[in-house]
Image (cartoon, rainbow, N blue to C red):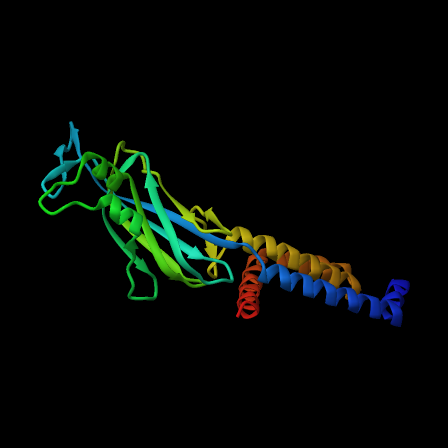
Length: 258
């Protein structure tokens, strides 16, 4: 142990370690700044009602604008810009294969702005005065929507809600796609969170912090019982320092990115 401490106290080793640390810091900074853009999205479905003939409860019917709907859902999609960059004219496509999209509500959260259809989609859905939509237009409208986000800032979230009726009693499937160079779109399912951070991420980072704590205890503490007790107690709350560490890293990331 003494030999190890003397090694770290050696002047030349300190200079080399400092230089390597500076190089590593510069490399990490560039990696953060040049990181590929990440958009993440989640979808939640809430059943509004179901039309059925039940031997106990009798006939139950759900209608929309006077039409009977078998399986009515309210589905909400949220997409967040998790990158360090702001983007312009982002084209977002919503599509499905097993439900029919009907009325919609769109919003960029924390702003009064709604989304508009893309010019391409407007042209596809255009109906001349006095005419009715064609079958292909209805099929497109029920199965796909396309929007344009003029400005999508870092940390901003898009929220779209649809009233839709599914082809079966199972939860419908609704997906997103983004047509923008350098962007990776990730689907994130429902996750339990702690302090606003997914528990899995908080636990992983908490374990890494725990390893650092354990090494510090081994170097500084002389009583094995103290090391064992402290390590055990830390294990019960490891997710909490992990969550705070992730929040701090996010703040640092945002500060580096401006």
